[in-house]
Image 1 (cartoon, rainbow, N blue to C red):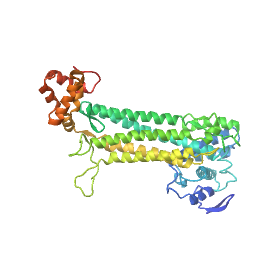
Image 2: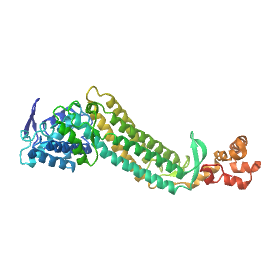
Image 3: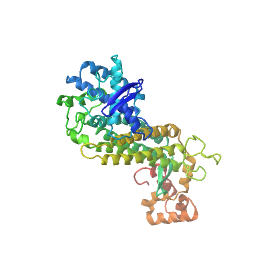
Image 4: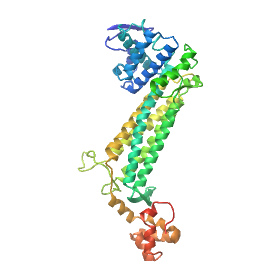
Length: 462
């Protein structure tokens, strides 16, 4: 054990851990979710800290003998080392101070180890004086959220991009399969299964654009604002430099906000990102539910799609197989929608010069990105790649449909079309048969008008 102290007193710390006294207090105080800091967030925070050290060294304020081991320690965390040294609960009071100090302590104790000094020798390399130089939790925490969201966002949009690509592949594969379109859950006019798949792909790509735009907008940071955005204890040269070094470390362009006070006390950019994910989740829910409906049955439902069989569907009904992959996409997206409410409440509840609710904002946003990414990957791998159409069933519903009579409107008028529809409903006869019996149009012209190509493309056939 080693002893460390802060202004509240002294605590004993296990000598094999890299965190220190303030992290230890946080472990005791915040037992909320049972989870630890998201590893992506830890690595994002290490990138921000590396950028601050580089900026402070460039101004001459950070001594080389302190800065270099801190940079090495940060690089090791960025590379995935020591991630087990960040045990504080993601939901915590203090606007993220416990996370910031956890990172500061691990950086310093690893840097001390690098130069051959005992952990806790904070008179040499200090969590507050050096790892936190020209900083506050109030600028490093939101900036680290932004770096993490950008990283996770790339994973999410890559998964969504693959989903869109695979939907388009199915669109081409199913382009000649004619089926009934439906509105109000009632028969409408024909559409191809391929057109439906392409429409889902289009909606998913719109979601990608929506998320990318929101994430691009949060590359404006408040670094150098320190406590309330005024820049107290941060040199002007550092404030100018730190966004440049952060861009260098991350490989992405970050800029300092024109009004750093605004950027410190307002978090509406996070609401934009969360809202973009929520809206995209709604698109995915709609798509998953369409798949469930088209696969319903198989004997007593629509049965137009054959979903891959992934597991038995019932503990009591032999042979039952449920659309579990579509269901899990739904449920993951429900959680994204719920998380957006928590983010909204957090964004709304920032008083005066700081939003102290950033821990719950970041926790829910990180979870949303992770859940959606994993659920989309599952949907592609476990359902979409092996999806098959039921061509025979699609044709059977089409043959029984009365909705195809809509294509006859320009040729025989609404009244005659309605009369044909009513007789088809009442007698159960196919629409084609009723048309021919009434002698309203020649068989050749009728077949052309009611051909799959003519009924699923713009214009008037005949």
